[in-house]
Amino acid sequence: MFSFLAFITGAVVSIQSRVAGELTKVVENGITAVAFSNYVGWVLLTILVFGIKRERAGFHAVIHALRTKSLRPWEVLGGWGGAIFIATQSTQVPILGVALFTITYIAGQTIFALIVDELGLTTNGKKKINALRVITSLITLIGVMVAVYPDLTSAQFAAFPIILVIVVGAATSLQQALNSRVNQVAQR
Image (cartoon, rainbow, N blue to C red; front, side):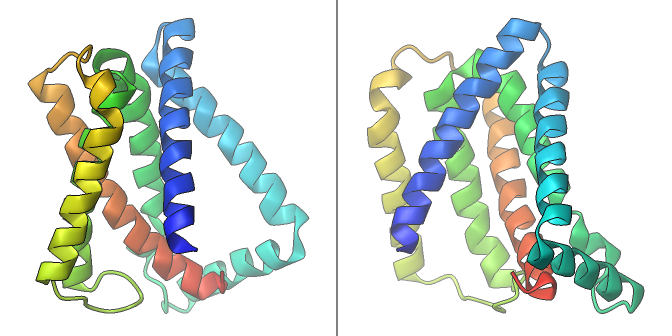
């Protein structure tokens, strides 16, 4: 089940990358594209949170946890990772293309996820880096490389955008760890 969800998530990220890149071309400004994308997401999220009783209860649980200091303020900053991801996606997909963006993003996310787990930043505690986890990470990277290889032949290789996307992939791993803490409080 989780493998299927991971597959779907990967597909959605690729589609989102394409849409963000196209929106950037249409408005001729990556930051404007990001602002629009985040605004639409924020409006939809607000409707969901305040329109569904369970989501509203989770929101109030997070506010209570912040007031009682059982959740620290820095732990709710995971959303910034999403905003940074979308900003990078909107500005770098037109430069790198979806294929190169995807593989560099997943590389940063996969490698740093091992470190996040080793440090125990999620609610599941520490998970040691071992041979099996390294091998499965490498298989993931190889799988993504094989999937996007046909598109890589037309990709433009530029050092700064590639490094930036790898760093954003790493930041996304941290975002997911922080979000797991908030989700635990919100009972999601």
